[in-house]
Image (cartoon, rainbow, N blue to C red; front, side, top):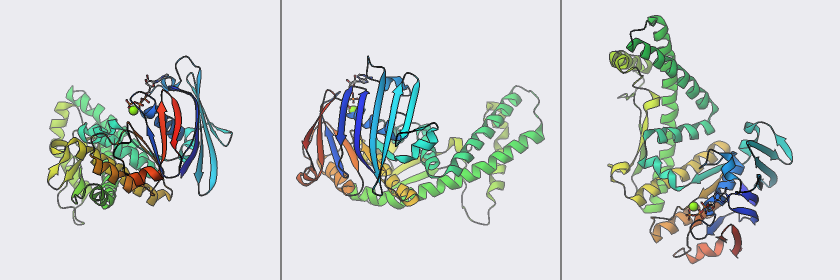
Length: 373
Ligand SMILES: Nc1ncnc2c1ncn2[C@@H]1O[C@H](COP(=O)(O)OP(=O)(O)OP(=O)(O)O)[C@@H](O)[C@H]1O
Ligand SMILES: [Mg+2]
């Protein structure tokens, strides 16, 4: 999948610009606050229909203007598709080949994007909530059954928590009803556990190799930390029975606190180099490369399941990376998939990569071609 052309009007600090992208590496450089992130954001909005950094669509419209417009020509298997988005006060119009799409779900799968942006470092440094969101988002995109199971689990969890809160206040809750809810919830928890375990295994199949290519370190891996930890997973153990027993053991504690204390809503993942947990011991650069590795691994998983290649957007990925690592990252993605990458300068990027890339300069919302491919 390739974004061939992009046109944006009255989007953030852009008045009216058009860009023809290269199918390989595109490097966008410029000083701070010139519009690099805004440009990537417009591509993200074109694909996903909302911004990765603002919940409020009106922020996307250039100050003083009434509507923003984004158009892209996307090529998949030699077929061009025109995508358009018009953002107007509390209203968003989506079009594919001039035909208006009323449902976001009819529009959204036309352009697939994987983005890395500075806040992504929260995946390692931030709270478990961020990591669960990541796992949920990726698995929901890959498998609608996961999305449905997760929604059902969350619904049952809310009911169970209400029951526990009542019991905490000595309000009567029917035991049989409470047990039915708990048992249903355990079924869903078991499904989610299996989905997540499989996803982490699949990520690990590619992650270790990618991290090695970028750093020469060969023992990077991701560890799934389910909150219901079950030792010795083998066929002779009935999981559901084991989970039920765990819930029985902690019931009094759950009533005391008025909340469900174990389950997929408390799961976490950890990132390791050998024995070293990167959240605690990783340097800034190691953490950045770990997140980037996960993003690059996602591309491989995406290709396996969808048979197409997503477009990769890398915002400010180079800060905190030494020159050698910068070039390793560029070499890894070169010729792999279309990549649009922002940076404040081109210093110390390999000649060969610069020669093959399309290079654009941004100054105050104006774009100039520094080198065409
Ligand atoms: N709706 C808007 N209308 C007009 N200007 C805006 C709007 N939203 C943001 N801007 C401006 O766009 C400018 C560029 O922002 P952007 O985040 O793209 O910079 P950047 O090039 O990525 O910088 P950095 O290197 O610091 O990340 C900022 O000065 C900001 O004030
Ligand atoms: Mg930026």
